[in-house]
Image 1 (tube, helix red, strand yellow):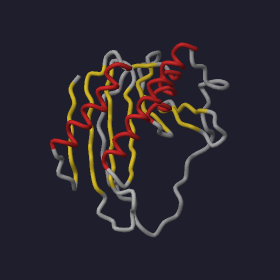
Image 2 (cartoon, helix red, strand yellow; image 1 turned 60 degrees about the horizontal axis):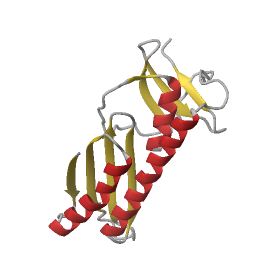
Image 3 (tube, helix red, strand yellow; image 1 turned 135 degrees about the vertical axis):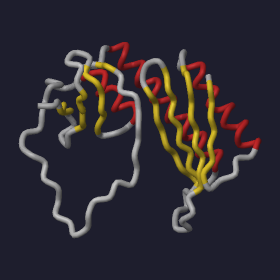
Image 4 (tube, one colour; image 1 turned 120 degrees about the vertical axis):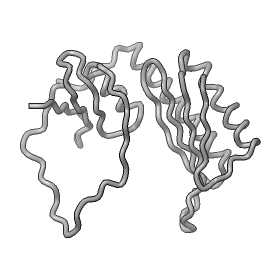
Length: 181
């Protein structure tokens, strides 16, 4: 397992680094094939934020990509909470795989009608750009991956059609699938 620890607005001491390595080492036992873990530790500079010690982790495996973010008033506590959250994600993934996860209703649901942005006086600004590898998978696997990382949508390459699709969580709790037309 390759572990990369980064600091932002925070000097990572050897004590914190070894503490994080020890805690994240637990995941090695739960996940048989973690290939890489990226841990980012940061301190929010805003004095009005009391839980300003933040720990974010991304765990790449041969299966799903796990992601978590936790914050508290102490960096060690943030790391502890982060590891607990990742452990819960691994257990939830295993349980769903054992049961054969089936989403509610038809996974091919598509929202009808055009999406019209809200009127605004200012131009929208892209503040962050992410790049990631798109793996071929089924819509059901994409929903599972989306739940694991805790997002409301997930972009993936549909293994059946070889096209880029998006699954998303609807307000009613069901899921939708967006396919190119």
